[in-house]
Length: 164
Image (cartoon, rainbow, N blue to C red; front, top):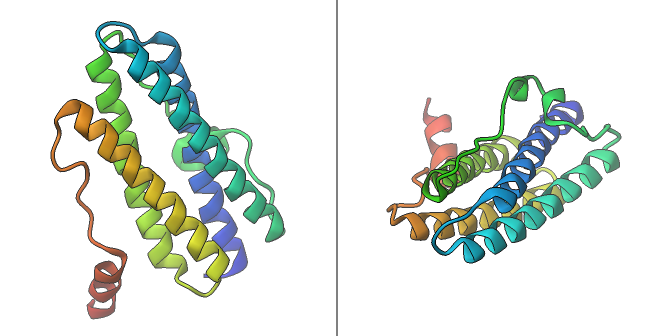
């Protein structure tokens, strides 16, 4: 990938992080019912982690000479996306789990596509992926959803693409 393609991919990931922040904070404000305090606290803490991801991506985009997006809708794939809201905590958590599952796939694809040509970007994406997997595991545990996610490993995806 060339530098502009990497910037575009990082901005896409940043758009997903900014969107996730909105959804998690909305759930933090609106969740109620049984165990709402635990869910409320987790929603807020995960939003802060996502803010750190968005910041790291923005800093890397800036370092590469790009302009970090400030609104998810600046990325074509995110136009029209809306926060999943619900009065039902289980539905909120399922929406959040699905968001994390998508993030895991997006980061796995980015790691594979960008490769290790830039070790700093590679490590940053791997670190963020580990956080997303942990978030999915937590949401999955609360929902008794097993497995939390199913994706091929980066190495397996590379082998599959190489064989094609």
